[in-house]
Length: 120
Image (cartoon, rainbow, N blue to C red; front, side, top):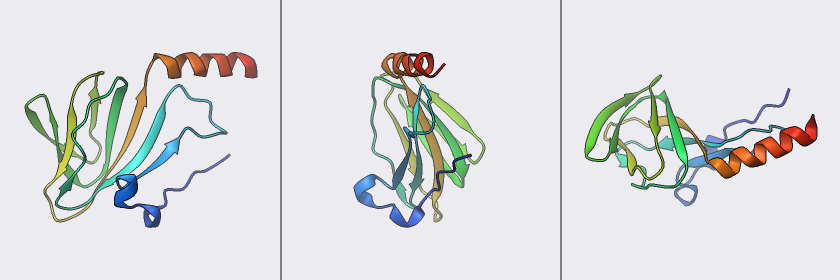
């Protein structure tokens, strides 16, 4: 068993208040991921990319904005973004919001398959 610990003390604006938890040398996975904190009264950058992405709300409450739609996003919720969908997390509360994100694309899937076959 190998545990990666979330280091809140190492978070800063330089790393967008996020810690990359994947890739992880001991875990062969077809995706990458990060744990993030959206500070009270702030938001993540509005962005889009070529990967598929899932956000899992871990603690607190915020808003998700994508393609002109704004929906509440609270602990336990999961949201999915297809490639090219612009999105942003907005925390207009007075407490921090925490979430985990996972993203993948066909190149990551191919690399996973290659590693998996070589380990078998």
